[in-house]
View 1 (cartoon, rainbow, N blue to C red):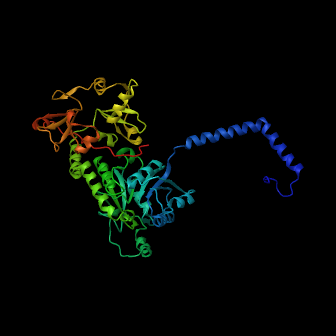
View 2: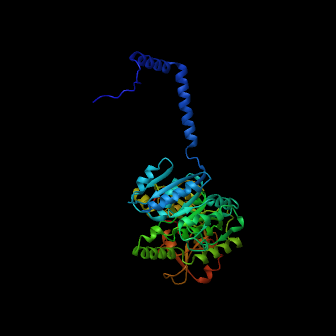
Length: 472
């Protein structure tokens, strides 16, 4: 086999030797070596400073599954009609239609990952949120076509009020009050209609109780405030409703930017499920009900509690205010914490694996953004919950029971409402599912007369944390 040569045509052997000698001589000079060192160190320093730096723009996260033609059209519309700085992140839920190859061919300007299984809308979005670098984030369905002004108008709406948590556009096809009447039947006729939305119009912004997840804009810190989407919902449907509830429990606003229009083909991936769609939708509906019960009542009751002042003043509102006290939580890597009065205390055991394993079985796994935002207290060493309770000086606050005790009224049965005793208040569990998530069993419950429990003022409700399959 012939070797390759870097020799230029017509270049003599003598000249090549002289060039190599000159290069080697330069590298031996102290000035050259010092310059090389300074350049290398400067590059390392610049790289270190930029590592983890946020994009001063928007991360557009698109989950996709076997809809390459729609995905192409969506991405092409983003390129054509987005003036603000942005990055596109596509999470492929194990497509088999050439989506992975398409993403690889566009890797110079699309950030993407290909999952080895279909993790559904929630799982795909969560993976993309973990990759996102933007100060703002958009969840976007792959079967959408964006139009001029879509992002700039929503950003203006979001930035107009710090109490606004998320913003959505209007569209031709969706449930709820984001759907509007449109005159066109074909996508090629849509563009003329969309011209009417090119100019911003704040008079068209309106607060709503519900935003659909086909397109949602929010600040990235909302992830740490309310957590990721709940992956307990299969494939798709209800996970956006769930997220809406958590946002509204924090007394934050959801707003429709009526001056931003996006075309939506509508439930393309879900329609492909055919008979499986009804089964999936039914399962998700059951999970939603078991988790939230009557969410509208829960939200209004929580607002009344906040307005009445029966709770500590929050400087920053986060989902962990709706978690119980004196329960074990853990990170994705298994680091254990004891959650007490909005503070997490790292728990270290004697090293006995059986004790650590016991704690981990009862611990709730929280995502990294949620854990980061819970203030840290002192490290505690304990080998049992009894030791932890004693160490944290958990005193009796009412009925002679320790702080954090679980209460139920009169005769205990499956429909009994459960409460946690906390700072002289009764905090209701949203549902029995929420209690089970926090490892509350019948043996933990103290049954008391109804009038005694209801003599205590209501505190904030206790909700279930979102199911996260990949909390890293």
